[in-house]
Length: 416
Ligand SMILES: Nc1ncnc2c1ncn2[C@@H]1O[C@H](COP(=O)(O)OP(=O)(O)O)[C@@H](O)[C@H]1O
Ligand SMILES: [Mg+2]
Image: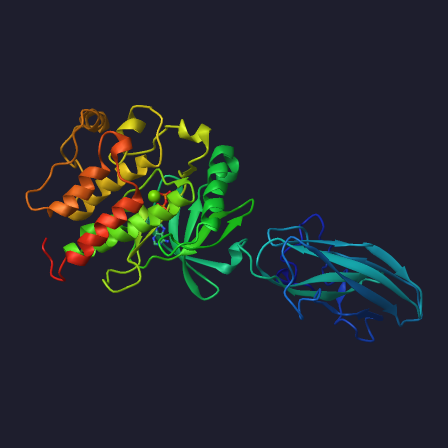
């Protein structure tokens, strides 16, 4: 008798009645079964080299009838699913006594996966045997959701939740988009974010491992930032000035990379910087993430798309004013970020009744309150970055030059 485990992928309609009363399971290629299946396990060449995804590969299978009667043979392939699709040249064949016939089985792997399933070959006399499919795909950025072990939630944002997870022995972060397949605009945003992440490879940008794009799950699998967002770190740890300058430099380097590649982030804030380490000596402390709202600078339509989501705290005056904007809008956000990083506070917190009051304040040329103790060189970079007139703001390349000077002058002790 077949148990459910052997038929995990066969839909109810396709599944014949394999009750012990109607069909007896016999081990494949035994004399009792009467048929010889060569090969009894289909590897589709994957034993030599992994099979490419989205490529149809085949295996020819010979069915030899060693019995003294003609036999009708039926193949019940697993139904299409998120991991693979299968086809066969003939679903049913007749093999005369002492003769052999050939069928061709095709498989297309849809993601980076390992498949080990069986399906029944049924003989008209009420017996069946199980044929095995064993195939492994090459590495790609299309991942198998079943291979990802989802653990605790790390954060929640506009598009969905981010979870800690394990994928092939590696700790990862999984950004799971809520039911995006039902919403065409969201799924466009998801695909856009993925396309950007796939191309943008820099030590200051969170590394993209892959994605799951199936009818049930839409998620991005990326490098795990052990310490979470900078926003949360700023509330938990007191950082030295030296470390703040290093973090500001890491962020500016990541932003310069984005702008060099004609990508506007459009949502630069402490929540979208992920902390890898708080060590002054480590190669980098933070990485930029969340490209959900990013747009190509050259995309004219996007440039006039001024819809802002959530808080206006980091939003530049030109965007608040619905005016044309450029990559300098990110520089403005960076100026506000420098304030938040130095102060370890959320800008304008408890100062204004609502977002409109903040917007009025900013459009009036005002900015977050300056503390008396801010080092003048740091304050200078911050104030230049949030200049009202976007053309007067520095580029990230200028910011890096200014911060490099500060960094080399700061002694190792905190001056906070
Ligand atoms: N790679 C990661 N490692 C650790 N935490 C993460 C990671 N990615 C996101 N997070 C957490 O989840 C939050 C939301 O993620 P984000 O990518 O900004 O999504 P959203 O578009 O929903 O804002 C972050 O602020 C952070 O706290
Ligand atoms: Mg975010």
